[in-house]
Image 1 (tube, rainbow, N blue to C red):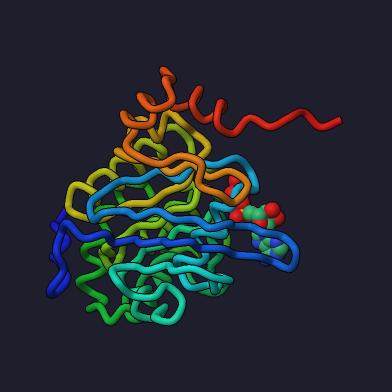
Image 2 (cartoon, rainbow, N blue to C red):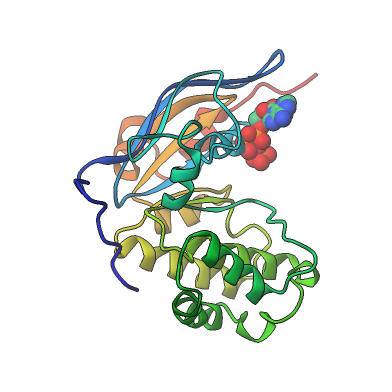
Length: 257
Ligand SMILES: Nc1ncnc2c1ncn2[C@@H]1O[C@H](COP(=O)(O)OP(=O)(O)OP(=O)(O)O)[C@@H](O)[C@H]1O
């Protein structure tokens, strides 16, 4: 995969994601509470947390879909909400459940997205076609995306996220609903994008996938960051053999009556 060129004036050692004291409330509900962490360029970072921990909310803040109640969220120095149009050029986002226009084929959606990113449509499609073939989606691209299976929608969503060769890939449970082979194919593509310089932040409930793909992890629980660091640092700091036992230890909750 082609190497992603650095942005003008961007130092590769810089943090591409900066989150400082971010809080998000919905009425009385505190979904995120004083969250702070940074992701340096080129890192693959796993975002882990039990159901309802705040992972999707954090992704929606980073994409500028939601505005933080307080705190700082920056992508390559741009404010995630105020500069959200510019930020969208830097990020490829795969939501947990991608939704598409009902009247467009997979190919038309890719072409539309290429146009929105100001890309040459022919060149963008020529670049994405081999990836579609590797994901075994190429033969379905002329069908309506709405008729795709859940796994096919995920694959199209990943292609849309990667089409403009973003600086940062934000993937919300990317392999949720994928079969084993497709999961491997996904991780191959994500790993190759990272090797080419793309930073990756992804959430998953599958600890072995984090161990396989990530160098670093951030664990959130009930809206707060409870641990972060390299996988080796985390295991050493908490004296646990595996990421799974560490996760269970840190997120243990009392049983409900
Ligand atoms: N629009 C909203 N209005 C009210 N509460 C919300 C809203 N969005 C999220 N929440 C609440 O914020 C908390 C965090 O939700 P979020 O979807 O971010 O969790 P998550 O970590 O992605 O969970 P899961 O692993 O189950 O997908 C939950 O308690 C959820 O009910």
